[in-house]
Image (cartoon, rainbow, N blue to C red):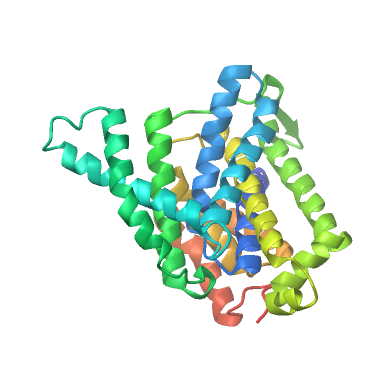
Length: 344
């Protein structure tokens, strides 16, 4: 193992860390602002890759797929946040969706024994009828703020993760797919005896540009000041007139956008396949835990640590690569439970 081996592994770890930064930064900001443990965040990564495949199939443009996939998943994230992570505002719509979903499930169950309930139209009509009493019941049940109940957060976001995964399986199928970048990014350059794939260089560059843009927004704009105030003390921020509800919507959409962009870029590196969301999610949480909740700089440092630890662990100690990945996280938490840049 000469110098070229170490330089190659460090470069690979850095490029993988750049990908994890896109996923971990959004997750960190969402928790910092909303105090919600979003276990469906990996689904935005997966859906971003699948939407990009559809865009490329329709338009033939890989470049166009990146913003379109990001904006599409950001819209899904905003709708999810407004309907299900808010105690007030859209009670009737939320109750209607829940009631109709349960009604359709009941109709599908009954349809296994009643031949008349075959086909989507009879099932939907029967589901709508069954949903009426459930909707009336839900409208009489007072909503409880999800921010104060970690168990409900976990159950809700895990449920969404399974729903998104099943939806992706039904729409795009269960085959492994690859997102092919432009030919110029599939080339390799030699630098000092080390062969560097241009696509990995692109991953590092795009993560650096996005990270710099996020830092400028958070540190140099009025919106960034409001976000930082909400992270520090949401109650005090509301007291001085900051619309924390709108800030939460913005951050949730931004987090979903970053995860989707990561899914598009990662699709040319990892591929796109069912189960990728649950495979990538623990790494995203490792990034956030190491860096500290709500810290953009912490997400960057955490992504670098996780990327290097994962790549070097698999290259040097493949039998115990999970230990080399999570050992730094355990040591950092033992030294500083809030993470490197986290605050009490």
